[in-house]
Every structure is written in C-alpha cells, then in structure tokens.
Length: 150
Image (tube, rainbow, N blue to C red; front, side):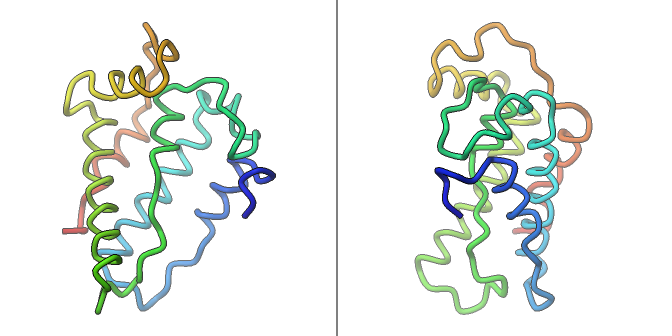
C-alpha cells in the first residue's frame, strides 16, 4: 500500500481484513485479534473522524489520544507460528508484546498522565487541556491487550 495515496481508513481496513492463519500460534492469534479489534475501534472513534480519510502520510490535523494510540504501531509481520524465529523475528515479537503491554498501560492510565505527557512531547501544544475519553469499548479491549501472549 502506498502511504502517499492510501487513506488511514483504507490502511486500517486492510490490516483488519488480513486473514489469521489457522496454523498460527495461540499467542500470535491472541495478540493480533485484540489489536485488530482495538485498531478498528480507534479508527472509528469520533476523535479520529477529521483525519481518518486523509492519506497515511498527510499530517494529522488533530493529534489527540485516539490518533496517538492509532499511530503507535501494530506489528503484524511476524511468523504466525512463532516457531523457529530468527533473532530479528524474536526481537520483533518482543517489541510487539512490549507495545501491547505499554498500550494497555497508556490507554487505561496505569501510569497516570503518561499518555498526555507523551503526546505533549511528540506534538507540543496539540493536546493541552483536552479531556478526550477513550470510551468503555476501547478501555475494555485495552485491558485484554496482553492476555495470552506471554
């Protein structure tokens, strides 16, 4: 997919629609299913409405919590079997599971104020004084981000 012509919505839909191989490991499947569900909810959150139809490479007009977590990155290109991983693949899996745990902590505010601080450092002034909420659906999905992946 060309990030200069593909919208964020098309990119998200593509990732969500990728089939989960029946031979995938239970840990890989758990991580990918939960991430797909989260990615879909973030993409359709009202706070991303202004930017979801822009191309992936267009700067976001509203860099809020929803956008930040949508853009945080989801790693799907890891061998689904999780068997005989190369050193690089093992590092990528560790990064994916680490990001899952960190995403959970940020969304559920386990580290109070950390997400707001990260947004302010990354996009100064974009999130100042905003009280945007994820909503119960996203919070519930975030609680499951690290389930079954250890």
